[in-house]
Length: 332
Image: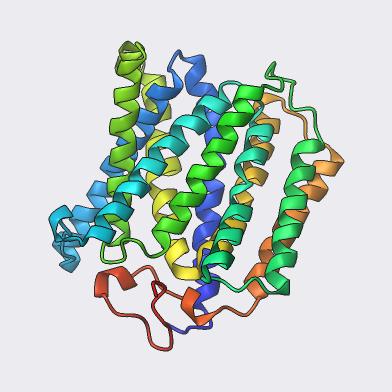
């Protein structure tokens, strides 16, 4: 593959995944209206997403001969990194969907999308990414635009007002996401993307189900079985807002690096706020429109910035175990 095209294709992969993730706010409200709890939604969404990813794993193993990587075959770093990624995936989902049940979607997304700044700062400290002027400008523009997207509207038209616990949950989700991004960059490179995401989604489903039972809401886990419309909603969420975008996001992290992937994921709040306005009557004003344009401008700037060779790593690399021509392995 032409290296000059790799950043563009990797960026497109992350952007599409971000747009699919942007549907989660309205989807969560819809399933809550059917009586499903946030713990139940996480269980079903992650569980169905895991099944969808498992189908991809089996197909690739049978058709393309991709070897299945066993837990015992990983070294200590690989096992701890993959285990931490799975744990962060679970805590991220639990916190995020609890936050959606308590606060406006726009406010939750504002708090959650502090994570690119956390990733950028940590990557610079660790020496993984050089924060040059274009990247700093893009990050500043994107974060400023996101503030405008949220601050430009009341976000209380649907009855969800500012909630301190909801904000705290969203911030904890941001921290979990930042750790997930950093660990996923190179912590378990010998595990193919689809198999790694299968472990992450399967772990999230198992942990969410255990939490639901532990807090006494285990009965809600069976609600979709008796409600076809609810089952359709969680199935859609599992396939198109879990399995597919999760694969895209993890592939994008390995393809273009965590800073670029994190900034491009800022497309998610633009989509989420727009859907909230259309479906949930959360008004979008002129300031929010300008903020959305700023988010996209930041994504364009970061795509036009010259990539560092260590960040250009196609998602197929973990399957071959060797870096692409002209690029260095991300883990050092």
